[in-house]
Figure 1 (cartoon, rainbow, N blue to C red):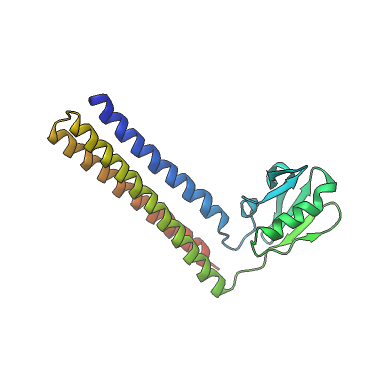
Figure 2 (figure 1 turned 30 degrees about the vertical axis):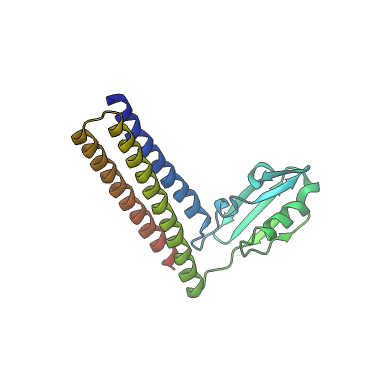
Length: 187
């Protein structure tokens, strides 16, 4: 029983860690005004008949805070890369210059910044839902263990531990969102 209880807590912690990792990846996609290769994370290019992540088909660089330069490994795929960026609906207008694609990242308007804050808030809320789902699954597991003979006071302690983890991870999400909000709103 002791081992199963420890395993239950570890599973909940792992699920909550995964939620935070996912949040950080999603926040990288929400641009805060300066160009980064991470803005194109998630763009998939039709590369020899296979959907492939952009970073596996090209070098992606940011020579300054307002530009992204994409240099394909194979120049014949430049049109596919351009099409993939447009289809990703990121609000970018890629310029094909023959052997590279240049993206000028426009400065953010106040209205766009507020939209990005809303988007970041929605991502943070989704992460909190994931954390609460991990809590529910952990509590269900504890109830199952209790039916199988785990003492009631031990089950109560485990549920309290799971709630403390939930609170800790929810605070972490709030902190990460506050940082991202500040980053977005800083002109």
